[in-house]
Picture 1 (cartoon, helix red, strand yellow):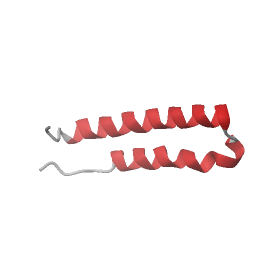
Picture 2: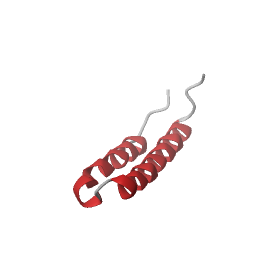
Picture 3: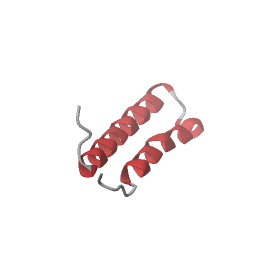
Length: 58
């Protein structure tokens, strides 16, 4: 499996962070208490920030 370009890796990271956020919000609204468990939503935000960081092409 190839590593892909920096742009492809960035897109995949953002796509993954977006879906993770969607599923976490849906799960919190379904079985959780959003006012109590909102810090879990920082995980996909951190994931997106890591995906957006500048990278060097090798």
